[in-house]
Length: 181
Image (tube, rainbow, N blue to C red):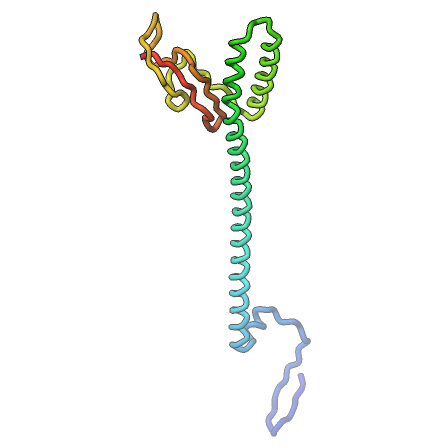
C-alpha cells in the first residue's frame, strides 16, 4: 500500500498485480454503447449463420430433387423407347407362329425374339401373365366377353389376344384379353 497526496486529500491506492479480466467482467465494465454493439454483432452473426445453414439445406434439397427428376426422366425415356418396340415383339411372335418347324427362317426369328426378350428383361420389363388369371382392370383390357365352358369361373381370362408388358412400377401396355362372363 502506498499513500499519495493530491490536493491535500489523502487517497489510498491499492496496487494489485495486473491480471486479465474475464470477458463477462470486461463487458460489464465496458460502456453501455460497446455492450450494445457487441450484442448487436452477436445477433447479426447468429442471423447470418442461421441463413447460411438454411441456404445449405435448401441447396442440398435442390440437388436431391434434381437427381431424382433426372433419374425419373431417364427411366421414363427408357420405358417410352421400350414401348415402341412392343409391336416388333408382337410381329416376331406372329412370324414364329407362321414359320414351319424346320425352317431356317424360324431359327433366325427365334434368335431375334430371344435377344429382344433379353433386352426387355434387363430393363425390368416383363410380360403380364393373363390366361387363366382373374380379370384385373389395372393389367388387362377386356375386349370380348364369352360364355363359360366347362368349369371356367366368371371373371377369369380365357385367352390373350395381345400380350401386355409391365415393370414393377407401371404398365407399359395392358393385355388385350377375352373374359368369361
